Length: 272
Ligand SMILES: Nc1nc(=O)c2c([nH]1)NC[C@@H]1CN(c3ccc(C(=O)N[C@@H](CCC(=O)O)C(=O)O)cc3)CN21
Ligand SMILES: CC(C)C(=O)C(=O)O
Ligand SMILES: [Mg+2]
Image (cartoon, rainbow, N blue to C red; front, top):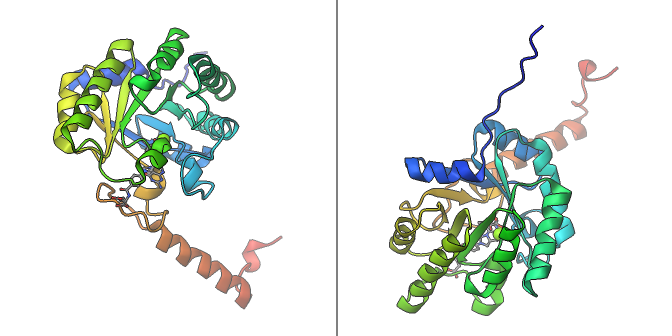
């Protein structure tokens, strides 16, 4: 009897670099739970990001700062249980890596060991170079994140577009080159001018994945709940909404309330 196994083409950090080399764009969305991750994996996404945006989207906080390492591990382990194909990247949350390289490595190891994820992402450039090197030395793939870095929101005060000025743009390019040099497998570029993002993508061999960074980069990422219209009153220019689930779901919930109140639900067939 044949023992045919299901063959899944799993996405690895190597596949992403190959995609850039072959000119194939990389698709990435956020996932925080099993059910959504299952749908995203089946739909053919390349990368799932367990983003610290879970702090906003899942828990209702105003910023990403409050979410804890334990909470990120809880979200990441649910996502990992759902996937057959996607590469899973997990954000190191605020406060879990900024103190020193040893703390950063400890946090990264906890994510890898306790969630089964494949890689981690940290916000920042040269300020956290030693931490990134330490994590990479342990064999953990690292994705960088430059431009708008929401964990530093209180340093800037706004979510406006970053690196519009020459000096900031130069630092961003230097940081991107450094992240490539020390061995990161990809970089997220958030809310920077399209021309700058294109220049960065053309200057390095690792993939640049943009959010609000134009079409000259190697892939795109959005927050899933934003692109399916579940979140409300978040309308940055870079967001394309593919569904209006806030309205559709509200309609469904209203119908359920009506059906319960009227006694229409359950009917004869919906009982024992
Ligand atoms: N739901 C959600 N979606 C996200 O994309 C997201 C989060 N949460 N939480 C963490 C970060 C924060 N991010 C943000 C936040 C705000 C803007 C933004 O463009 N805000 C305003 C403009 C602000 C300004 O110009 O001062 C907007 O146009 O909505 C962009 C990305 C991206 N991330
Ligand atoms: C917006 C993306 C890149 C992110 O870091 C997150 O969802 O936390
Ligand atoms: Mg994040």
